[in-house]
Length: 103
Image (cartoon, rainbow, N blue to C red; front, top):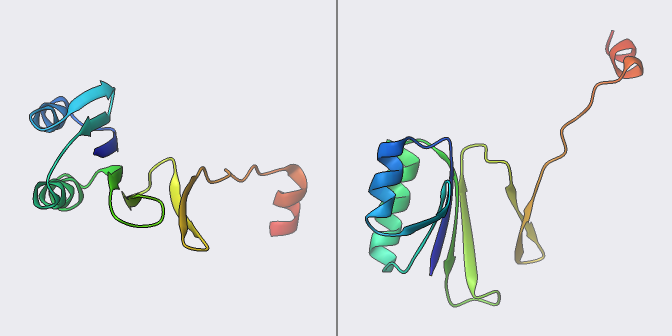
């Protein structure tokens, strides 16, 4: 099983993804792909389309899945003692005191 989440993809890119997977939500694709097809598809997303994307796929490890990310997606992959977790980075909010300290 493969889950791919792409941000800001064009309709033609979504159409190409729909040939191999189903789009369960805008930009979220799910399918069963061989390792070769999965890797070729990821190379296309990264090198040809240059999209912000996250791919989660089944594998033989402790978690039974692996996570890949590209670009600057809303979520980042963090390795927590060998366990891959997704996190949303905090947006730094600039306050009046912060701006005074910068000068």
